[in-house]
Amino acid sequence: MIQLISIINLVFEIYQYILIARILMSWVPDMERTSLGQLLYKITEPYLSIFRRFVPPLGFIDLSPIVAIFALYLIQLGLLRVLASIL
Image (cartoon, rainbow, N blue to C red; front, side, top):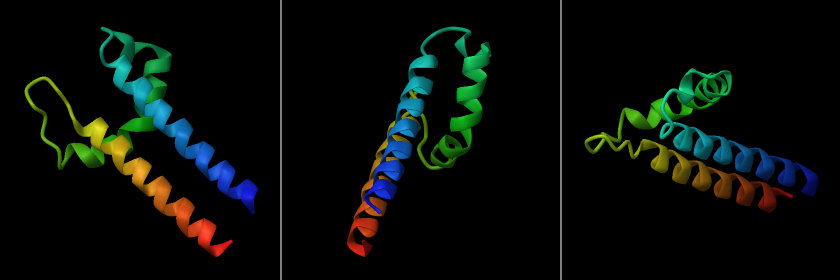
């Protein structure tokens, strides 16, 4: 069962890195038009769109990805603690 916790932890960490890559990609002009950019967009946009409804941008700065990463981290911690207490 410890393997299950490790796998879940790894999945969360990979998704966090994907979100960070998406944030960095937004700084490079036309990067979203590449095949990698489109793939990252498809993977991350459903999750990020949830936070864009509640976190308004500050001028040209979109803070919703930061809130989304923090929320994902809290979900990861909570899930891992629940699983650790069950096992």
